[in-house]
Image (cartoon, rainbow, N blue to C red; front, side, top):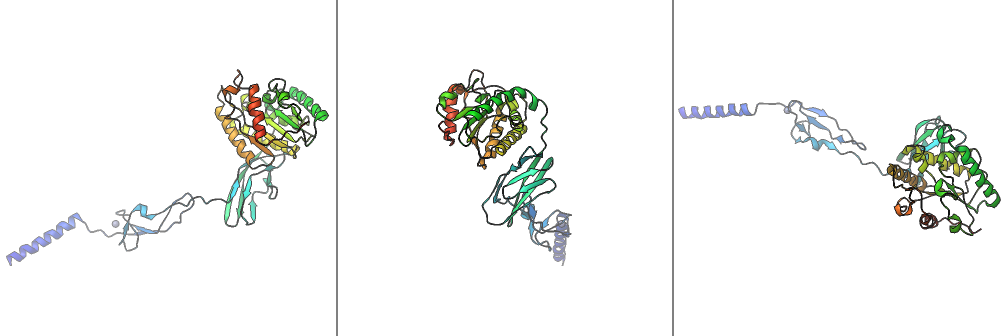
Length: 366
Ligand SMILES: [Zn+2]
């Protein structure tokens, strides 16, 4: 009897000890509903959480404990778009044509464009868009179950200030001389005209032009110090590159936009695209060959040159009327004059003329 009492006490004592180390706790389970994962955002399975002890369970009875990471449904991958699209600038007003936007779709479903019709007009066949006002306007492109979008950046152009008006009288005078030469010696659909800045300025820099293109139907009409703004003015004021339709226009432009006019990267990219859009509108049958901007050996323009060239290469890629010719890595210091900016006569032969030919530009005989 005495022994039994001891055994009983021992059992009771053990029970009390157990009660102290593992206090009785009834989970108060709260259900967390399932949330589906989205693109770029995790979801979760349905689970039950006890707010008192923080434990998570897969079931309402609290029988199967799980960890936090067991509840996660991983975010969905961005679905592969069947479209190739790119944001596009569009300039308001009658001076500027609608902008061709990049659009590639290899599927068979009918394609639908959705956009704010008070802000844009869009030609779904020609793949052109025209902004009616300033701002950033999304265009949603859908076909079957696929949807993607691009942004139209609407800009108004005010052709005033030093970018547009500085030195323009002198540039126009020189452009008039080139217009006269084209009128007398040029042939639409046959002649190749080189235009742009000092790189393609015959008297000042490209002095071996007539040796390289002897017997060829080629004219050199670049003007030192010019920017995209100057060439826009020359076209819009109908001085040159107006009422003519050469076979090829070969162009070097852009370096003075940031070097002289202080353009930001974004501004020079927009300006180059606007000038070429205008050029193509004026001379739709002409093929344009655009040389990348060369790096200088001095100054802080290295990055802006690379960014401009990359942006223009991408912009030209899906257009059949303009070819980007990348000479950025070819014009090394040995091909630059002592000024660290302009090409040597060898550079014209071995890089500019050679790469133009390699790109597929055929310059006709006279
Ligand atoms: Zn609990």
